[in-house]
Amino acid sequence: MFVIATAGHVDHGKSTLVHRLTGMWPDRLAEEQRRGLTIDLGFAWTDVDGRRLAFVDVPGHERFVPTMLAGVGPVPAVMFVVAATEGWMPQSDEHLAALDALRVRHVLVVVSKADLADPAPAIAQVRQRLAGAPVVLGTDLDQVRSGLLTLVQRLPQPDRDGDVRLWVDRCFTVRGAGTVVTGTLSAGTIRVGDELEHAGRRVTVRGLQSLGRAVDEVAAVARVALNLRGVDRRQLARGDTVRTPGAWLDTAEIDVALWSAGPLHRQLVLHIGSAAVPVQVRALGTAGARLRLAGPLPLRVGDVGLLRDPGEHRIAAGIEVLDVRPPELRRRGAARARGEELATGRVRPPDCAPAAQLRAMGLRATGHRVGDWVVDPQWWAGRRELAVMTVQRWAAEHDIAAGMPLEALRQRVGLPTAELVSELLDGTGLEVADGLVRSPGAGLPPRVDKAVRTVEEWLAAEPFRAPEADELAELRLGARELAAAVRAGRLTRVGDGVVLGPDAFARAAAILAALPQPFTVSDARRALGTTRRVAVPLLEQLDALRITRRDADGTRTVL
Image (cartoon, rainbow, N blue to C red; front, side, top):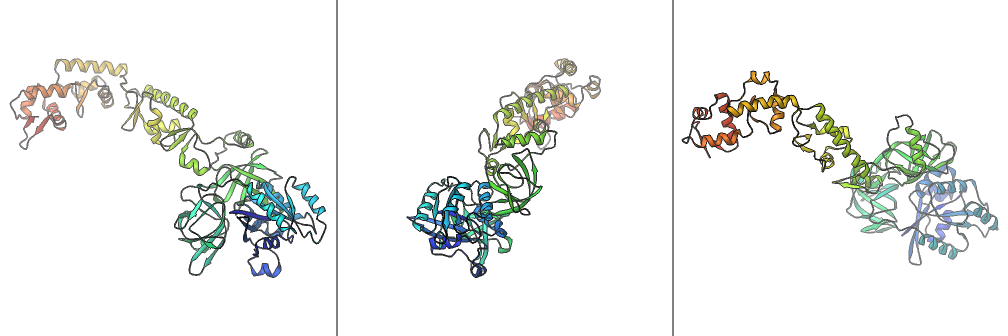
């Protein structure tokens, strides 16, 4: 299927031409038929040489330009109608400005009413404004059909496997069926039973029609009607979207490139898809702007729309979305730099983002893949270098600390999530353990090393005579210093404030194994030549290590 919108001045015969081509009147409303004036979007279709053509007929009157834009927005091709009796008219200009702003490049011009006036002046006017566009006479329907076939053959192939984003142009209720929405499906495929999303809620496709026929599935590009379960008609409006769940980001602030830009007032209306949303405009240079939307829309990089000034009845500019998550512009010179970047027509992608988020933003997942994340290789290398320097600096300032807290390192390096820290440190020689980052085998600072050497000398003479609290205090070995010595493998922690040599457990096991089994705490104390202060926690540690077993009567056996 190929979808084509009409364009042109009011009463130039757009609806009549569609009727002659299809045999169907696109005007649906009684008022439209009574007045002979298109007010809302109309729809009709026909087959031409085996190709199905669907028409979105738009109103030509100035008062209904927003409706016209809702119909043209999602459609890739246009049949532009100019009457020979009047020639180029004001709404012809605005419709052409809209097509230019929306970058609609596939246009067929039909000069209507050529049986009522000489078409030559109108054709000349068209040539001045649409140089290169094919022009045919509406009185020759074979010529019109041929021109339409040539037009659709040049259209790009749609992405039928892409994410669905159906811009709603009509919504209504059908008795016995419920809520129905219609729109032009520009990408993806919809099937009966699919679960889609509207405004954060899940909806189910109960039924599916295309051009008046019930179908099981429809692929882009197509006119579709969805019968939805899970949403009330009153919760829907033109400009809403029905889309693939979890595949789109709603955004209320975007950076855009501008073209065909006239004066930009602070308050304008953004037309994109079938939506019309008031926006606040902040110009960034001459070729870019930041738009703050009155309500969020599911937009992606590369989306095209236009800005219209409803007060002055003019198209203010065409826009292309360049960033759906723009950075803050707080620092001096940031706005100027951003404007220069927007003028290039491309914005640097995030240095680090989940692959799914990049897809939702409309960006390709190029770069280095780290789990579910995609990172810029240069940025990643810089973060790794910074991480090593940061840990080294931390270690110098906290010489007896167990390591730098992982969360503190994440914040200082600028990683968005802690799960990336281990990947970042891979290959640096740093290790992560117990939520801390440190260099393996880090030595003790000189002042602590000297004190520990003294303890080591004592333990060499009496392996199980742990230093008393006052002796440790005199050596200025507090809990943090002792913990550092234990991590360095110089001492073994037996209990609170009780430390022995690194081989204490093995030496104790050998001595205790020589005792008659089982043995008591007193037996162990005497054999080890120590006090109860040391023997009790030492035996408990041996129990925990399954070197000894404590029996119900309090005696122990070496296993």
